[in-house]
Length: 322
Image (cartoon, rainbow, N blue to C red):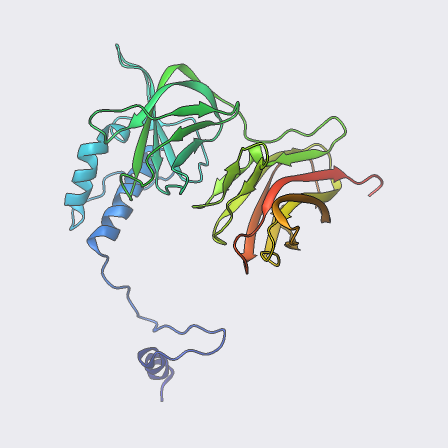
């Protein structure tokens, strides 16, 4: 049997071998559903308006066009005639902006592709300048609660996303927005304290829990969720890594990767008797070849219990003479 016929036979039979995925050389993906095509077209259009891609903004004709037109009818102001917004690298979507004109204030449009289970939208790095917030598709433009942390602006939205493709939150500005860096600065002694309040969330359930008894990254029930910190390394060299971790009874044993600068420390979470019973643990060292901006990503790979862990902080301390 020729190799081509052999491969085709494997595919048709649905057979696989350990560690090997075989596909027909000329296999073609099936047609997209209208919902999938609309989602891709709308998000491509929005990313283009936000300067996040060079892909043309025009979604083009097709079966998805009616859905695209419906979305534009409700949310077109957030994508037509706008400029890229000042907020970059947002984990849940992108931002566009419209300058003040006449009596209309300057506005930021937060295009939320991934709605968090907490119903909160965090505008990372937007320290101040917001006068009010509302949903663009809401005809009444009812106010949404807004709060600030000093570094971020938090908008409390509805429990469920009004639009699964792209919910647009409008921020009306009082003058110019104050945008600040997300990176944590080192202390005078060269150590770097990455606290839960400075975390950047990627996912659906994990979040910063600000209650005094918690003050932690928690609600980590989904292994697909991850968090990260941006920080500045003051000098090259070795840094000891210590975490402050808690875990409820019966939920120990999760494995979590702490990754920065192509280095990964894998940690097995300890049961501490309670998620807010925090214990310090030194988990290894990172080597930094040069000073500068870095990112620490924390991603679970296994969760045998109720939740991964609560993580209050990560501290990097320079190791003398190393």
